[in-house]
Amino acid sequence: MIANLMPTKWRALSLFAACLLAPANTWGAEKPLELKWGELAAIVSGHMVEVTVNEGKVKGEAIAIRDDTLVVNVSKTSAPGYSKGSAVIPKNAITLIKVQRERSTWGRTLGTVVGVVAGLGVGGYTAAHVDSGGGGVVAVLVAVTSGIAVLGYYAGKQLDRRQTTIRILP
Image (cartoon, rainbow, N blue to C red; front, side):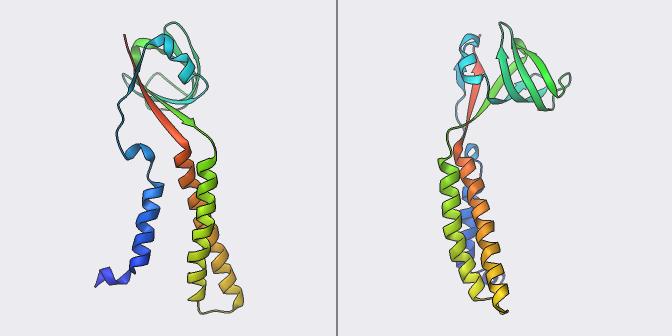
């Protein structure tokens, strides 16, 4: 009886939205890229990184790669000994580095356009079944269209992001 409360269209739409909003890195585990310390600067410098150290994780922007250290402008940390601001992480304390990069804006643009079109369809359907005056129908249409367009934008933003996991070779 509970299964009949949600129409099939809404179940399908909910499943589709959940798939779009799921982070891309949960779809399949990738093998870490293995690099020597000297090859790291070109890939890491200037990007947001999550560095796994012996005691936890340090997240922030990679500023520089020195001979034996990585300089990070820390925004979030779970590792003792590192606080927000500039931090120097020794090479031998690093186990993994995850680099976040954005390719372009095509995913956000596509997600927004698809969100607006889907929002107009869902909003129009919803507005047609609202029992109120003319103002309520327009408000429902605008609210549903805007909400789904925003969801489309964030789904597209996930498509634009690329995460590379790097393991340092000795």
